[in-house]
Image (tube, rainbow, N blue to C red; front, side, top):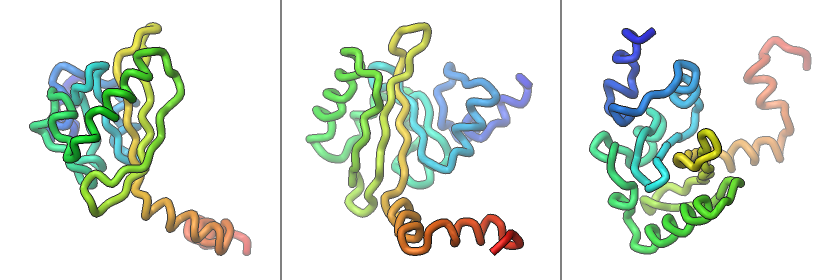
Length: 159
């Protein structure tokens, strides 16, 4: 499997730090999750982002290996980012969830969680959903229940 690693899209698209590798299952999970995934180290340096994040968020290969604060658009974002990371450094285990509008046009739902390896804080994961997509799905569910989903997934299933 080692020979195939170089062919993985996150390697060829430069969306992962050269020295940082995932297991075969983990990298497929992150690439195919259908949500934005970003991983940073405990100091805020970008280690990885998946294809969804490159297509829907402003993640670029030049950001890999650099502190994410260098690319924040709004001045208030960095003190908030620092405060959130400090919560985790102080022992918070639960994820932090928030809504953001970083580009002025797209609202995102963000979950940031600590990553612990052998009991030590190693970094953070960030999972991102598009607010519009979530609202649309919730609206369909509120209006029609499970029917639209079941009909799309099980078109020949029972009525």
